[in-house]
Image (cartoon, one colour):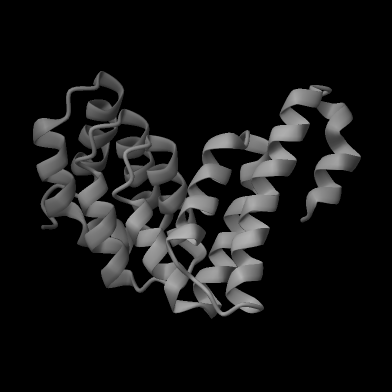
Length: 177
């Protein structure tokens, strides 16, 4: 997908302000990609471009930004480092986006286990929920391998919905750990 996708389909959500913000957000990500390809630079400016693009774009821009970032991690080691750094960002949306990028980015199962497990304990409910979702999306074998982390997260979870989700998951694998 490209900026043309947004321009052609803006009528589905006719909000010119959102269109401008989404276009600007995507252009920031594209600039970081350009710097990596043409200038051979992946640095703190790249991080700032990516995180500000994520913060400024709407959920519609996510549909373009996330696949771009996934591809960047496959071709540029420095972008993997940026995604890992994003997991520690103060902004919950940036951390959540990093989780989504990890799903199809160039991250090993062991890296995912470590990083998803860390974010099960995040201060932001949406990030914790997304981390649990990412574990589920990896499949039953992965989820089962994460049981100890899920138990630890369940023990300190305060959100009623997430407690229910953990209870369901833990009951599903009861007796198999």
